[in-house]
Length: 152
Ligand SMILES: [Zn+2]
Image 1: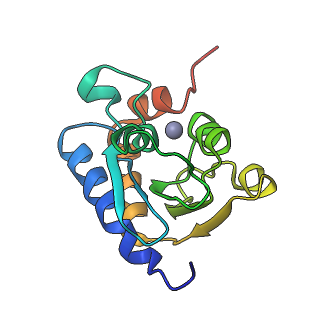
Image 2 (image 1 turned 90 degrees about the vertical axis):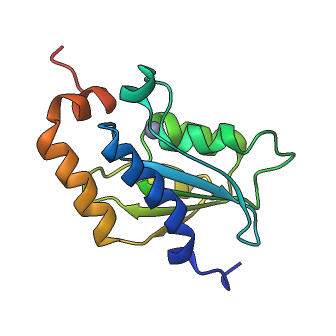
């Protein structure tokens, strides 16, 4: 569906990320759309807010969308490149298209997703980059906790 405006689909994900930042949480937001760009679900990382490390932006949007018969035609939009956990979710359920706000602050595993046939679109969005960079600078400990970086 190349007629879709992927940049426009970033809006709800970015709004979730900004809300997360204002709550003191990890500012990663995501949204799941159908092939026509209809919003199915959205959410944000809630590690800090809910004391729940399993709620990443992508998993929150996935849960918010509820059961879908097939994910091949869905589009997952996320403000930051997905971690292994969320990349696994994308492959597990066969999500067809992934739109990423940026991967300057976290590189992600885009080759692994492309190998599985996922269409990956990188927007390189300045707003996403700046929001994430601001968070990493002010809360490096929470960030390292979120990406599974510990001292051992
Ligand atoms: Zn994740």
